[in-house]
Length: 111
Image (cartoon, rainbow, N blue to C red; front, side, top):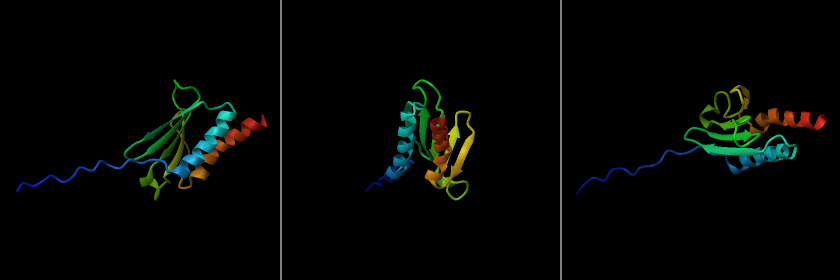
């Protein structure tokens, strides 16, 4: 009788849940309608999920919305990061974190 190796389990990936994507895509749709954003990309990694927002397809992202579940007890699991890598807002409530980008939409409408 030979011993079988334990089954291999791939490490879980972090992903955005449906309600999280609903909030993000709602904001994305409003910014597309305002002519500010044109493309996005989603990355699901081992320890984080990233929603990248682009003005044009072939450039660096304007913003990244990141989810790091292991930071939920420290700084907050959600962060909005600018093109230069600066953290614009961080917290555990995605809707509150996204407000930093909502303000940009309000400024566009006011002009």
